[in-house]
Length: 207
Image (cartoon, rainbow, N blue to C red; front, side, top):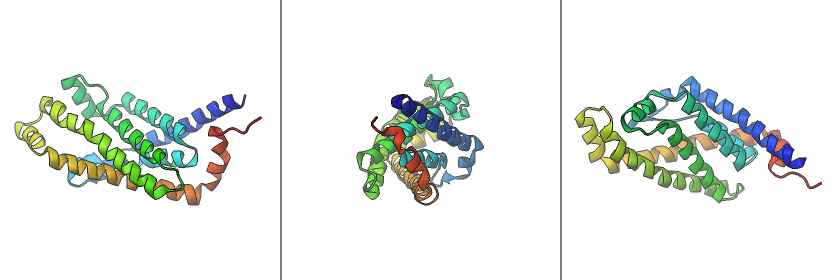
């Protein structure tokens, strides 16, 4: 029975936080928060919700909430992902990239215990930057040349890969910091009761 409650509690929390993160995505607020050197990269405040859930409860609910956000974004897919799918056949590129970015950050945070949060954040930054470099490189080499961009634009991407990947890495690193620290502040100052109340979700008391 305790396992059932634990599973239902994880699903319920994940659904609530996933819905909140998706609602933030739907507001389009990220379109007002571009990364200046590469304006197509947007800072996403919805990640704050995911990291808050991770800090309050743990990895499993945060990952499940991430999956729910990806599913929501796949249903209400952005126009650029539709363009990519039309010209390359690759489906749901944007939602998948979002999911990979958040999942890699959560994995990096999990590698270090929460009490050593500075090291955990460094781990999250490094892992996200390294892992996301691979699909971003594939984007430049395999996807961009097939898109209906002017030839000078395509040549700019392919001839400036190192510059673009370096800036994208800087963006990913700063996205982790911009999203994690507000989540940590909310968790420590505004929602101390949430962690105490739901810690038992992942660690049910023995009967």
